[in-house]
Image 1 (cartoon, rainbow, N blue to C red):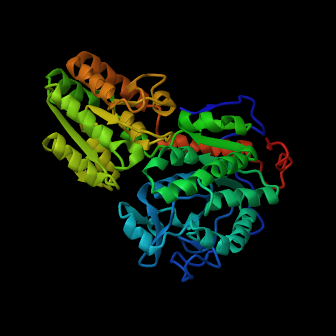
Image 2 (cartoon, rainbow, N blue to C red; image 1 turned 90 degrees about the vertical axis):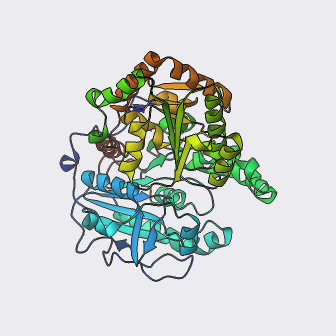
Image 3 (tube, rainbow, N blue to C red; image 1 turned 45 degrees about the vertical axis):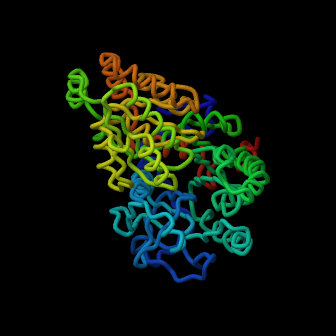
Length: 482
């Protein structure tokens, strides 16, 4: 389920799968030296690219990804969360070699953010096709200024060695993907932009929860973030924007804008109508309504609204069993509110669960995923819920409404109206035929999403809109400046 804003494409159409679109490699490839972490001073990049594999790089096309998702180092090995690793494997199915450049999270920061199902990149079956480039963790102004020049030189080197460029800008200070885009402009290289949420808008909407000194800082930073991000997008040749929420914000900036979805479920995860039948039978038998949510207990996810909605549903006299999988800064406050409202006994809150298959199994056994998202983001849990045949109900916005626009499977109320959300869920619980129809519709909507199709389509878009360096179709940046 991917659409284009401007139907007239630039550049040649793709002629087939990745194996048919490969050309001669660039003159130079990143040196492959070790899959272990190089020793480096805090805030300083390593002197060379690091690879997860051993031996020489494969001939063919190279994709460069510069992303904000951080590396973590454990026992000298670089790694990511398991879903980022899964994405890297999908990219290597489409390109001969992938260079991944990301900030390296300091050990002290890892202790602050422990909820991570970490995996060493060296253990991936595609490790020999990957080159890892750890960049400085420079989200403070001083660290950013000290590491700026050296990091830009490093980014310039790997841009020169890659055939296709994809960057994911998100912020202002310490945003290496945005700097990579500037360096690509300097080298007159076409690049793509991949944005999964409107970061400056999220920052603005959640500013009230920050201390006063951070509020003053963001009052200055948010307008700069907005200008900076849109200027980077305007100079891109391809824009990949996750969900209708993000797509609607940026589509006017790029001549080739596509609405895409971040999917980490496979075709095998999609529920069949036969597999759906036990859930339908249980609903028809008037079993207690099972409601779930999977995500961080953070302000933008509306966890306190979620608990209040469960309380209202319970007050209506309905039998309900609720589950919130995930931890976060408001996790303790969630538990305290559940105790205060007298619903702690019907809300299961086990905290963070790292195994993706366990999360999918939990979604599959529930009847409804209820969400209270307060910011313009594109949470993956909504897609995954549809994939396993669990309808979604929550605050309406372009992203969730776009997911079910073709086949249904969702119910939505205005932002912040948790009372209306609870009342809508009560209506569904009391009308099991309607709820069963919603379950069937959710399963049909979920058939649109698989990571195999998503990554194959994105790769075709890159080959279509980013001409190879030195090719007759390579126009430089003149055609993309808005």
